[in-house]
Figure 1 (cartoon, rainbow, N blue to C red):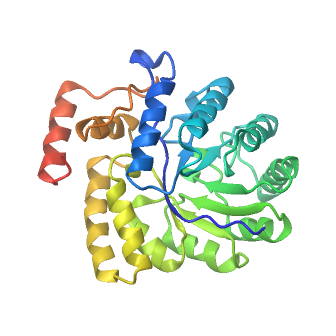
Figure 2: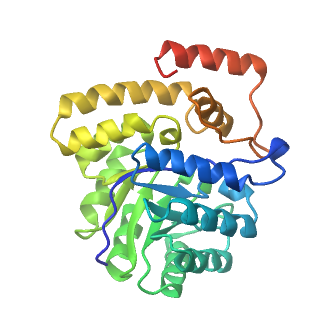
Length: 297
């Protein structure tokens, strides 16, 4: 499929009202606008960092509609549409196509252990339900349990024309390199591991879908633009800063750290939704001190 995607795509945080009772769509749109103004290339909506699995189907639809309406003419929006079951994944993917998202990211179904035959059938069913609409596979075995193998991805990339790329958050640069080298030319591999963004770009990844980019988009943009310009030493230095930031945000452990970090940098991503929890007063104090020491606030 002739579809090219590159750049920095924050995995948009989803603001909730106090106690996680409701999605705060107004704050979500303001955050989307803030990130667009800061120069990101697009947004990944309803993903892991966006607490997508904690949203109802109706909330996921409305959030995507609001974000597309707010910034869809300025930057590219990818909708995360993956669910445990194939039917709901298809429903959300059709909605994403209708709403105006440029592509849908589909995580491997979780909970049950699935072999490659089951996974291939799932992804083919979703792709076939939205002909000529770009589908991005989403590899996140730490959460979804079922890892996407290079063999599975390469087979899908070669046999299903609208499976146009993938987000790889598997945590292995070696496997990321195989996804890049074993898929057809033009298959878009997007890095999902912030700690080795620089290395992934050098390997051939087209960009990042990132949780940390909600808070520090300038670091990702700095690395991405420096690599494109051939300024490798500059990119490497910024990656060192980013890796330190990932440690401070306790990368991937608690969404509340990203929301607090954004607040400390002048943004507002609201509250988290249970079973996610808010930071304690002591955690907030220690976190603010650490960010200040790292020069991030």
